[in-house]
Length: 123
Image (cartoon, rainbow, N blue to C red; front, side, top):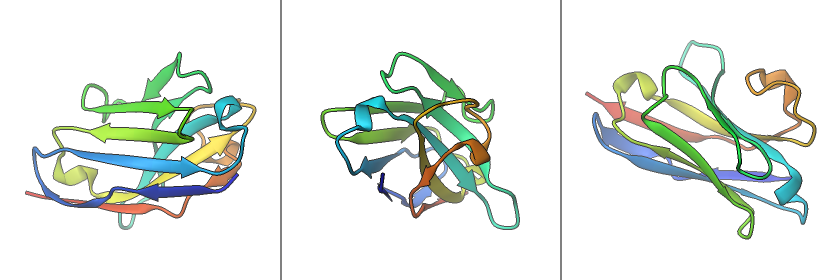
């Protein structure tokens, strides 16, 4: 599985952005997907995840109520809609994929990673 993240940019606090992650392969509809982020000088952290069917989503407390993860299996794409952005959301955002999900939150449980897209939120 190859992942290509896009949609990052420079925005002001309170603005919105939608990230996309396009996946290769015919088995996307069976793959669980996640978004992680890494701010400068910090470890990579979990943001959100969605199971293969889209029936369940999980969020980090820091983004709950502001971010929404979704997927379109017909387009092999997962999205992260980010609203009410804050300067502390500034980070490189990575999409990740795993076939057999053991934990939503641990990056070591994901098998495939995209290249990351930069999100910068100015105050």
